[in-house]
Image 1: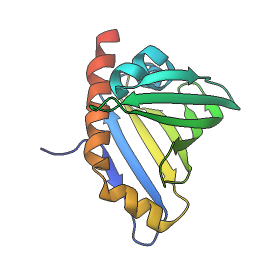
Image 2 (image 1 turned 45 degrees about the horizontal axis):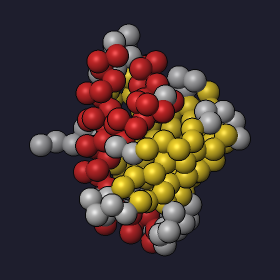
Image 3 (image 1 turned 30 degrees about the vertical axis):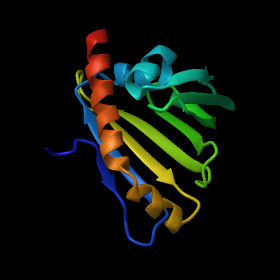
Image 4 (image 1 turned 120 degrees about the vertical axis):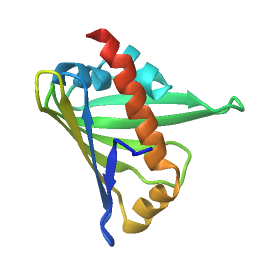
Length: 154
């Protein structure tokens, strides 16, 4: 099965470029990143905090099958509804350093939209370590769930 979310990683670069076209209007795609209840559904995580504003912060928590809690957090540096979110992303209690994420939302038609993510890692090694995980499959599964859940809001 072809992965709809495309991940482009150039050799010797500490960044990823990720794109995905959704069968969702732009405003609904953006809501999937903005509304805590929707984020929880497609990400399968608990939203502890989500301050959608410049200098806001966010904090999520997930529980693995063994009952262990894992935290994720960051700071929102820029937030322009239906256009872009610039934020940091940190996985708590791991060796991964903080990464910087640029999310851009684009209207393609009245019923379709595109998400472009530019993720910058501290080093090429950190980026490559992330790619060794089932990152691409996990992101595709999450984006597929996003589309399935949010399309019902039409």
